Structure formats: structure tokens, C-alpha cells
Amino acid sequence: MPGWTIACDFDGTVSVGDVTDLLLERYGRPGWEELETAWQHGEIGSRACMAGQIALLDMSPAQLDAAIDRIRIDPDFPAFVRAALGAGVPVTIVSDGLDLAIRRILARHDLGMLPIVANRLEPAGPRRYRLEFPHSNPGCHAASGTCKCDHVARERVNHPHVLLIGDGTSDFCAAGSVDFVFAKSRLIQRCREQGLPHLPIRGFADALVALPALLVGELAGASATSPLLSGHSLHARN
Ligand SMILES: [Mg+2]
Ligand SMILES: [Zn+2]
Image (tube, helix red, strand yellow):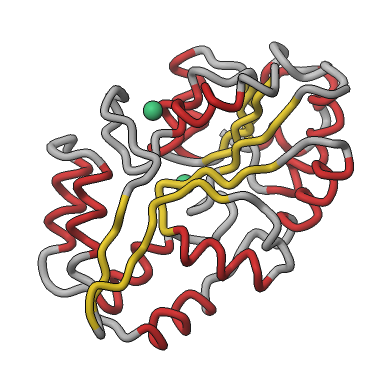
């Protein structure tokens, strides 16, 4: 059935771990943890947090490439993308992370064709970087770098149904404006609290199983208690 499109988070959803955190842990100058704490306490948005943190990176372009090349992805993501594209469902990476890292990681897995909506990492010196925000939205309460609800609103022009796949805070603003969510970790609790139609997943192996049911309309509105998926281990997680 036509009409669906997928907005897919990257960090913690496609990638194992958060790219920015992995870079900062090894190459961040002092101060990045304070920014992280301020963001966690809601004192600043992720946009201000990440702009400050990226400015604290101290690494050469070669070190950046090498660090990115050590980042692993969910092993079932490439199969999921092939299944979605094969069913005529476009997949867009919509991320509050670093476009350069996402592009390099996807290319390594022959997924360089996926469109990426993310923050732009720019060189600012031999060992310095700055982050730019071509997809931010001052009107969104989330104060993120990439506003995912804004992206979803634009996708609706061409696609009546939007599936969000994500795991965390950067997905919260979009979760309320899509038709269905495949949710990991913190996003599961958020969807439950807000009463949003969603399916808890552990990774893309689960997403791959659930996608055909979603596309034929057997999942939307049924949420995680669908008899369709009973007996499947999706129910095992809390
Ligand atoms: Mg994430
Ligand atoms: Zn938003």
C-alpha cells in the first residue's frame, strides 16, 4: 500500500552508541561534560549543547575519519532499508547528529543513497570544527539542532503516512506528529506516557518483522498489544 515514508533517527537507533559522545570522550577538551549536564537538566537545548561541544573537539581530520570508522551499526539496518525501499517506502535519516559522520558510516554499508537531514559539521581549523544547523526551527519547543517535527510536516505534503523510528530525546517532538512509531529505549516510555501509537522494538530485526504488517494497515492504532505480534519476542521487553 503506497503512501508511507520513514523518518529514521541515527544515533542510538542505526548506530551503536552516540557519535558525538564517542568523539567527545576521546577528543573533547574540558567543558563538554558541563554542557551535557546543562542539556540534561533542561537549561539549554540540544542545539546550544552540541554547538558548544563540537567547538571543544581537538582532533585532526584523519583522527575524525578513523574514529567514525570504528562506529558500528545495527547489523539488520541494511536489510531493513532494502525491505522498505523494495516496498516503495522511502527512508530518510533525520538526525540531530553530525551529517559528515552519518554519510561516511552509511557509505561504508552501501547505503550512501539514503537522504540525510542532519546538522552540518564544518572544519574550523587544523584540529577544530563547528556545527551548523540548516534544519533548526525556532518555533519548536525542543530547541534541537534538527527539528524532526518540522521535517515530518514537510514530508506530509507528499506522503499521507509517516513512520518514525527512534530511541531518544531528539525524537520526542516528531513522535507526536507521525502516524506510527517504532520505538527503542527512552522513546518507548515517552510514547506510552503520551498515548502515541507505537511498537517497542529492540532493533531493526524487530522492525523488519513488523514493517509488512504496518504497510498493510494491521499495525497502526493497534500499538504493542496487537494480537498480530503476540508470541513474538517483541513483548518481552519492558
Ligand atoms: Mg537517537
Ligand atoms: Zn520539532
